[in-house]
Image 1 (spheres, rainbow, N blue to C red):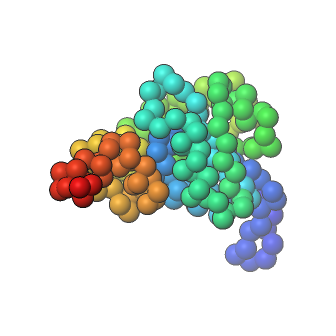
Image 2: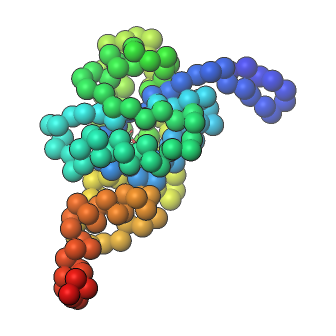
Length: 183
Ligand code: ADP
């Protein structure tokens, strides 16, 4: 970072990688990206292809949702990766892994992952950003659970994601049939 004049700090082309499942992307994630862009010139959202996690959305679906949301944000790159994060990071010019932290429950997992990544690549640091007061309770998992049961998740995920969740859980179709709109 370069101090320009009093109170103004200019970054010097630094890139952060924000990895995660993004299954699906929420406004909690988006908040971290937007705040990350206050610090870094570019944020690469790296969607992990990890079938062991049995994602609801395929990598292609997740890529499409994230790319659509950030289509007008030129300093956000959206990509996916398989395998070790440190190997993917090495192929980019990123200097930092960006992660979000919610309650203490996130801490242990994040601490272990950051420590492991640093042990695999001693030059690689992880920067944590605290969740915002509006999104501390938002996780992809709870969004899916609520949406599956027909609960409203508007305002917690982008509208496109609301629609995709409804399609996945066949909510509008069931509702239409129930009240005979297809007749
Ligand atoms: P992963 O499966 O790697 O944990 P997630 O998509 O669940 O991927 O999360 C990616 C990152 O975003 C993690 O660091 C997670 O803690 C953070 N994150 C998720 N939801 C929020 C939120 N509401 N506020 C802040 N950070 C969040």
